[in-house]
Image 1 (cartoon, rainbow, N blue to C red):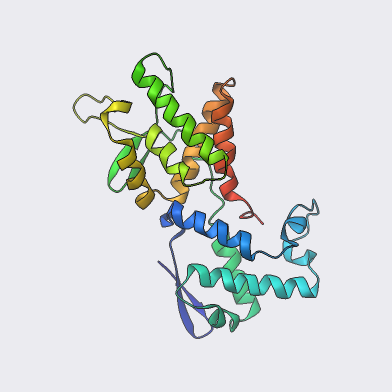
Image 2: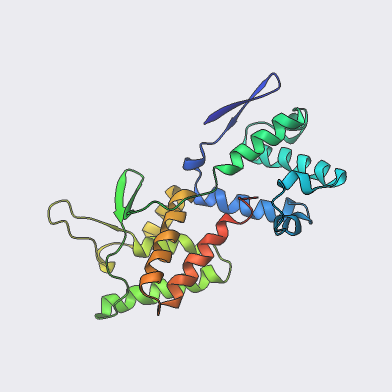
Length: 233
């Protein structure tokens, strides 16, 4: 947890790298419901002026109230307590915390640790050369279709399909029939973080650049990238 001061009161915010993907998706849905209606129009402006300098007084008031609500969403303090903070302190804390969601691609990344176990990304992808490969590809395509339809919880299924454990003795990665995909999907739902989900997205993006004919992989990367919407504002 991160401790911050709000006037004479102390508040606790979650460590951004520890935020679960489920929490991140909840936050995105919350933003959709609470973000001021003018937000996207201002964000889309090509002007180099700072975001806050583009707002009129009414919009600034709405922005500060939105900041208080969003910090209340993440912290142990309520909306009313955040409204008592000085404006510079309120906006500064909000902007600082939001900046942690500007996830960057990690070069040469091929694995991640989830609940104490290291899972690896595949070296080959959906070859469909055997019945097992065909089942793997079919499961991936079904989960992908759900994700592209806005059902973001399908992302856990995609992670469960492509991430594999490695045998410590042989160094061989699991194959699709070696584990229960449904169990692993539920397990990832409890443990997969937002930053890990973005690294998976970057991997799929990189793979799509190599395999340009695989438009579905590219679409998956684009869908996951949408999880970063508005965080750079």
